[in-house]
Length: 152
Image (spheres, rainbow, N blue to C red):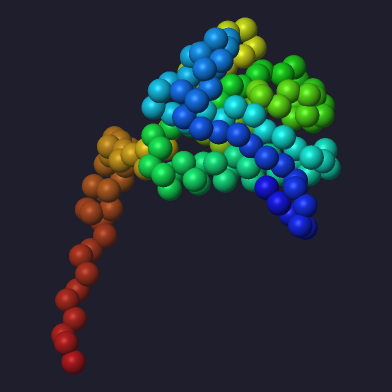
């Protein structure tokens, strides 16, 4: 990721089969139908937004390629942990709360480590709930039908 004509950060991702060691990681193995984000590198501690931009770029590229899901490994840090600890010390594992903000859900936990997954299937239709159905029926009963207008 470049900004102001200099490197601000980089991220590595590919189908999980390209990372054989991922099969051995706690909370693994990753799913064969997903791409796996394996690491990210931020150049400057003063630009934490770059990590968000990198994730958004991968999500966009994966959608464009028709990928079913993205997986990565998350870590549940103690509350109040510094940004330095969360994003600079471990470049191969990401804060689980940060991943949740993008919609990643844990697949498996092993201690503080989780395999997190983001489904890229798109919007799913939701069946009309009881409340919505009642409101629609009340509206239909009390709101008069539109009066037809004569064409001019």
